[in-house]
Length: 349
Image 1 (cartoon, rainbow, N blue to C red):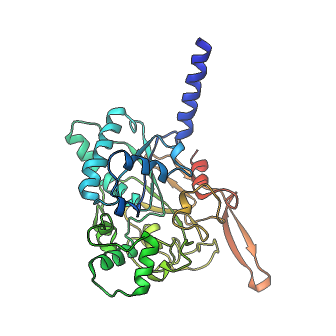
Image 2 (cartoon, helix red, strand yellow):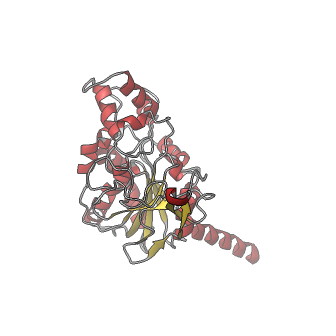
Image 3 (cartoon, helix red, strand yellow):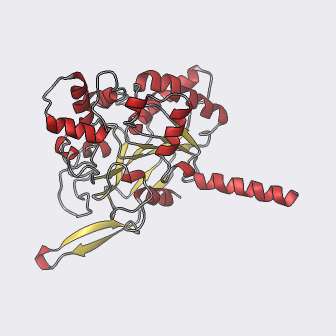
């Protein structure tokens, strides 16, 4: 009996250790879910949707999730009914007492920024201990806004220059044509609105960025996104650039495909935003999947957490092409057969 109990405890501790990155508990914050605009989930369905969202890779490697419905607004019901209760629970449970890492995708980047800017004050005012967030891993981050959201709101309200091509791009992204009664968090995702929401947080939590430049929509949506994009989010947002502009990389010296060359990249970033991995072959949802889609390169190969711990990716440079037509490329080791999320998880551990 004692032996069985010891084996059970060993298994539990093994699972707990496996869930962490760098020894820190993982908290997931999912992104925009277009079907929510029609189905308007509540209660248990919001949690079920959150679990399904991360099923490919991160769900079983996380300790907590903050699930929220996309038919609501960030500073309204998303925070009051879904974020705030979870923050209180995690504070009481001591989830982040020794540090934790938030992993976000897409609009989860914006929700996480709002959390980072406010959680300490909220919890202190409630007589609770603030969360010790040492870093965030932001995949395909939409914190800088999404041009498609601007188009969707225009389509829903019948404003702006709307034609069949705009409606097609919006419907490909959302799965339906939006109306004024079901745009929810799309209001917060408009570029100017998103960039004004908690844009200068007092907290110095490092926001580590992981971006792709592929597309699931055969380039249809990319026609409305400036610079390189992942089919949903333009690189100015996924890279964490200080301003919305047309960028072709998260770096000014490395292209999305790893080519070492002068390229149009941001010269400044939002506070404490640090782009790390990039890949030309990863679309918006591929970044949190379990399959390798393409080789991965680095905008920066290392960064520090808030407490000084470090994450560093191993890279190598290689020459491709012949004679004067050759170029040098930077590649993350093992990236051709390891998914972007897995690269992050393995390297962090």
